[in-house]
Length: 468
Image (spheres, rainbow, N blue to C red):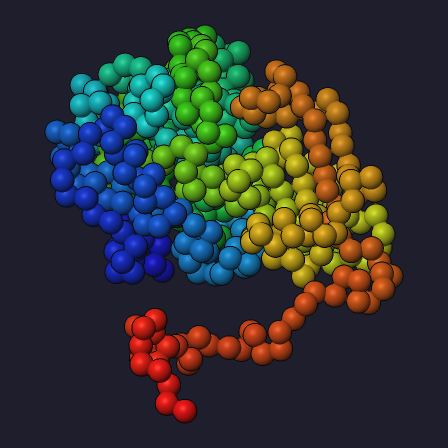
């Protein structure tokens, strides 16, 4: 398995010439993020010298859809079905002994100073400080014993303290239960895991599903986990670094601003606080950061949302073929849906189902299956030639929306759907796409000379005239 661990995946990328190694000194403040962004979508980057730290930093390990598919040993069109199947059929984790878990190579239980130990970057100009952006945040339901995994932005606010943004989802629900009982909620933050486990953490599931078990299904084998030192949490045994701690009850401290996925700043406000009680890590650990609003960040959130969106639409329009949360829409706000249209009105039904799937979704474009939904030029062509606003536009006013969308009013905004499907029973030639016979079979390398070839002397400006 090329992506069995964080390190085997890095080795694979390096072997494929898709890992840039930067050996010169790099600053944690902006410079690291700027370099990673320069390579965004092209190569992962390994920073061997970050300020005065002995710990290197990696970013961009999966910044294209093809890379995520490759890590899961499928192709881009097989990615969503594989993810959906994993969500439907989780594989229980395998508990390993402490001595068999590389993340236990080194254990620190006291004198914890996060910024002294770890190269945690400052990414954007107005960010409030140093942020952990790629930590799997793991908590446990004390009643069911099931764990919940998610990713939250984590601002270093003290030697062993982190401000955390908890949205009103599963982790927040468990925290509020603990807080109302007057106790902290134990947690662990795993940094540097394999791509399948990273992706599984973002699955949209009912409450009570352990995302680490989804990771096992994606990997095709149980994920190996080990119990923490100071909290009752199981973490990936091959993680690079684990921070153990607890979310304090009835404590709020200022957090933010922070550059978020819409490419704007999330505002400063009082947030929950995590107190770190232990740090464990591998020998020669590697710190992993995700540059916010880069392709890695967007796809990590978008691909699991696509799996959920596909399942939702299929309940209403069984002939749905594929869905795509586009990077231009921050992989949250724009959805493109491909259907095999069998009945008039199915395009609009698909729009309604998509908008109902998530309050984040703002604009939906529905196209026929002959349109490549991963090629936005093709999607725009469908809008240009198959859409008439007076009959094909769906608008919803005053709907709950993303609070991080600055165009909304306190998280309330309008939604829009464009039905770009061809009307059934149209004249055969009206929507027939032009085609050059043999185009798909042409191999340019069979025709082009190595190096591109040169013009003959007779065809050069000022060259010899052809002899008649």
